[in-house]
Image 1: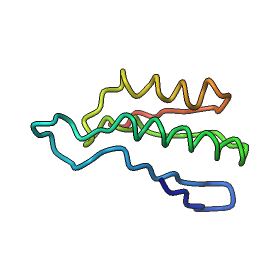
Image 2: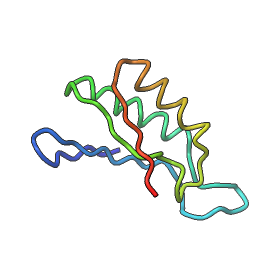
Image 3: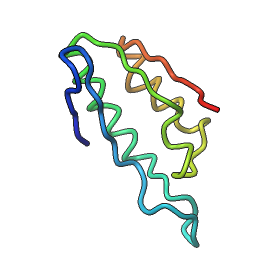
Image 4: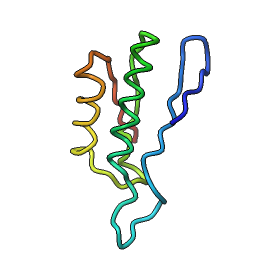
Length: 91
């Protein structure tokens, strides 16, 4: 987990939530536990800074995760704690 300040009002949170890049005998490389833990850290920082969080559907691209498992993590760690979240879909 890494926070990078891009401008005075924009921060980027880099989250490592997968192991590897390809499906194998152990399934998709997504690590839901790592994403869950990282989202808690993002929520703490968002509260400190008084900011909202904007993201794509994390964990669902190369990581091979399912949105039906990621969305509840976002709700529990961010929105239920009062952090405004916008999730973007890209073509």
